[in-house]
Image (cartoon, rainbow, N blue to C red):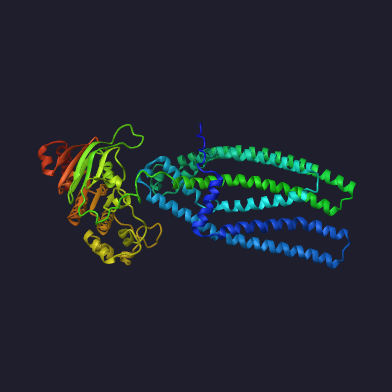
Length: 610
């Protein structure tokens, strides 16, 4: 299977290091940097104490010092080890608070970006992937956006240790230093090959893992429980899962083979390096009468010098990997915005006394589509007008409404607010003019009152109750023990409730009334209800929204008869326009569709009566 090459990160690790320090500055959590430095210092001191412990004690034995001096030396080193270990343990415990705060700041920034970015970005598959990658990069303390601080600590620690040990090794032959450096780098290159191979195949690994996780999640879903039992899907799901696991095992077997080869190579290089160092130190010990304590010290320095070199190489390799996570966050944060927000002209209630919407010679084509969804639409919606948009599925009804709401900009033509192109306005301000209920409306598993106000602060409870009463949901809510503080849904709160389809529609009506926006848009929110329930809901919207502009979309023509004007869309064009009576008298496709639907409902009623 051919795999896509991994895209090169937009930012390198030095740029991302600067970004992380800037984030610390924005959060004012400078303790994160201080802890990194102190941890590195204490860990180097601990390693140096360990390094000199055995040689110094051996030197005391060689010099035949008194028992008191020997015990004192051992006690001194023991206290040092205790101090360094205690300080290190304390900092490792205390470090999390600041680091989590920095990562939390990045999470908040991502959430704000996702909630405020231009709507077309949310439907762009490349940007959707970028958003998923960015959120994954901040999803835990093991990710680069938080773990990178451990890497900075390791870099400081390893560089400091390298310099100190290099100074100690200057007393030995430079050949030893050269052999140590070369063998360490060769061993690191072998491990680097394994790491790079796995990184270059990470999409393959993710695909195999995702397959197995997907089947497990599906098998546990309540939605599939009935089909699982009726159709006997258990064996089929088990076969799919086992196949995914086999692919995972094959992939990890390839990884382990490469790791084994790298480990063998590293062992051979270590044997060569230590053997040469041992022979060299042994020879100068015999020739120059080098004390055993110094022999032990230099031999330990050679081993430690190797670990510092390995640490430097590994730390920078780790920093490069973690930098990719940081780059994912930055790339999503830096995506271009097709709309103007803060720099646009403000739209406030004082800006206009009335709101007139117009589509002027508008055509629209979705990105990647071969043809336009809408073709040269001209539509003027007067202030306070009730407009219905009807047509068959795929006629372009929802796209037309999204253009009016400012979710998209037209491919050709203009969307005008009181004669001015909406592209010049602050798009966030423009959205405040609308209250909309779509087929898939948004509710959160919070209190009913919060779902109405879309906020948990500064609620006007008197207005909430008034809107609930107008929406016809007062009796239901006030019959509940917690009334307006009742939680919606059962996934988070044990005392949560589920509302019926009709009750949910009334809740959405209450929400629309509470916002009190001058323009209301209904995009087939009642499609799942029966015709009578839909008609009742629409009549309530009609009654409650008097004096405000309303745009209704429905595939059931009888529900929109109260509108001032109805437009019938076909193949992205306005085929017919007029009142319900005018369109019936015209005898076009609207009238034909209305007759078909009327006949269907009559037959359905006859069948029920029979």
